[in-house]
Length: 202
View (cartoon, rainbow, N blue to C red):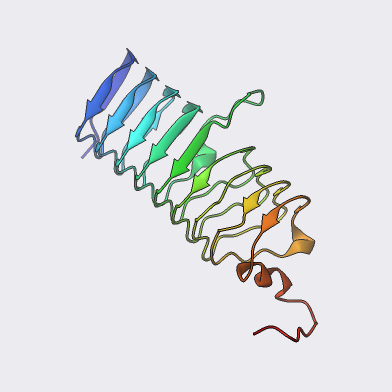
């Protein structure tokens, strides 16, 4: 059975509350300064849509597909965004602010491979098994985020804040960590894989 398609449409400063768009394809729609509250986009397709300065609050975007969609200064708060491949979206090369931000969200099993996400905020999130390889996460803020199983490789974490992040496994030799901030005891994981012994740690 084919998914219903909602084509085009421009919306500005609108609030959408408890809308059920699960499994729906939304194509070429533009949302400017819109707020989505407790909306469901699970397994939907957002094709070539624009989200500019939008906010998603307590929404479900699990397994959503984002082919050619554009995000600009868009925030997700308390939302479930599991299994999303963010590389499908379109990411402008020139910008002043981070295109997306996440606060108290569940973003497990998502893919940010190779994306430019300078200054991105992922605070107090659950980000298990997320792929951050080859991404530019310089000056990113991971405060309070659980990074169990997250993949870092050739990742730029220059100036990133991981002081209260949890359960990360980052190999210093395989990533750029200049100026990144860590805190004990989690920072001890940076020494894993090195052929050294540490004494005096209680």
